[in-house]
Length: 330
Image 1 (cartoon, rainbow, N blue to C red):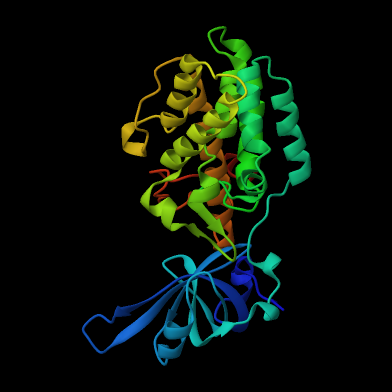
Image 2: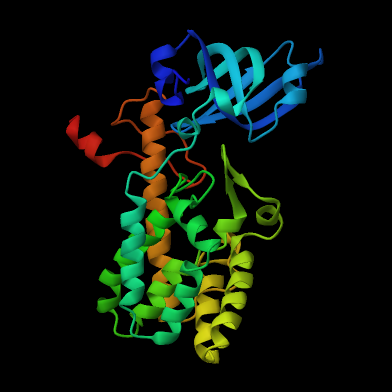
């Protein structure tokens, strides 16, 4: 059973631990100046990730331990450049019978069944029958539906936990319902449809068995292109009952293609109409706010004061500060 979690690292600084992790990555690197190689690992559990180094007698571990497996380790927790890491003395493959899988993957703090019910209720309220049939074709799919309920929304940056994709979508739907009435140009059903389907490709782009990673399809194609293929399949399915309006199809496709908002962030097209502009703005805000929460939590977990400014956050191209903690400590 697992007794140490990565979030506990500040309590174990300079102490030796023996515990289990999910192995996110592993590779051998050459030592500077020669003299052989050393092992570089990324270890994970439900509370985060931890960098690891192993300097000696790692050949068996490198040969037998693969990314996605569980490992048992012995090592010392230290701090380097403001971040905790572990220097390993022992490493071996762990059997699944030795671990509780719930210890290794973070989980949404919200009830998945309740979020799923809220999503379905939103679709039931659609006034556009074509969009309603299209979305239900995805949600009722025996493969896509369960994956939608459990998938993370990302590997690391935002909503990177079981149920994260569903949580992200439900929060977006709440924002859609608040924002749409402010703009008479916006069709609320089209906006909500995009909220539900924009990241549907992540159900195949990502893998989440023992740790979060990318599938081969995800690495080579990406979730936007995957989503377009899934959309075409469902459009063909619903059109067998009643033809789906061609211009409405083009609008839905454009909103999925443009939801990242700019070419440099992976959108093949820029948002060209009201619903696409609004959706990109709220999707970007929702993702950034969750990333901010994650980065501030990691900052404190690494031993920093809650009111201090973080180090440079590459994913947001800036430093961050918790404004509430900053004012509280005045």
